[in-house]
Length: 289
Image (cartoon, rainbow, N blue to C red):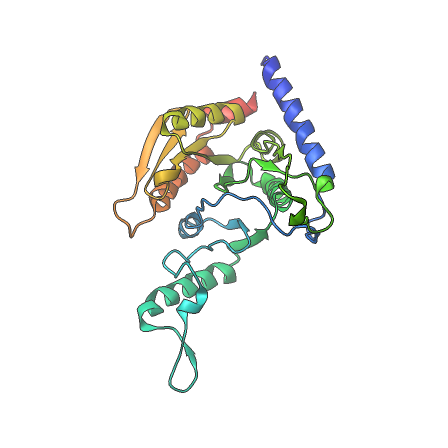
């Protein structure tokens, strides 16, 4: 099969950018110079519990301090709201939260005890991409049975480690001018090098609905994803659009008590099953070539 020269050039460029990033990245435990960081805030933490419910083992790479699986209906501001002091100074859960807390603890402990949930926290972009690389290369042996649900809204820009100030930047110096580098696009590397046979789902978030689907379709082709989930910042909790090579599928929740992730993961599980069981699928023929 002939290789498109532009695709080959893109592959080489992506590999070179990834190699340069990892060479310059600090060790995973080296976070002493990080006092503040850039991060996007859109979260899809609910999906983990639905994949667990469907029988998957889940590696949950998450930002420190972000919501965890099974925490959907727990208070957002502080876990202290979950507790109160009883008449005999014992710590107890208020009756208003007892049912959801009991269910959350029960489901969480079951997943942990059965070895189905591994949580890997990160703070910086360096940690996130190193963890993603390790998880992906370890999952490569699963072949078509592996799935990547890449919902983390990673910042598009970062300060290279070697360019970071070693000490606190003094505000007395006046306005701060900072030059940020573009974060290497790792989706292509994941798809071609780290776990080429896996089922890959990425997300495209935009504030402008007029360009959202077009950019999702571009990402589908550019990075070779099986699915790109397009979501708009204004309503990402209510509705998303699944973009595939076969077309578009809108997914929405029926009411505020539901998660759009429940409908979304159900459809993805079915698509992943087809990815595993249909030897003549377009995706498998592409990789065989």
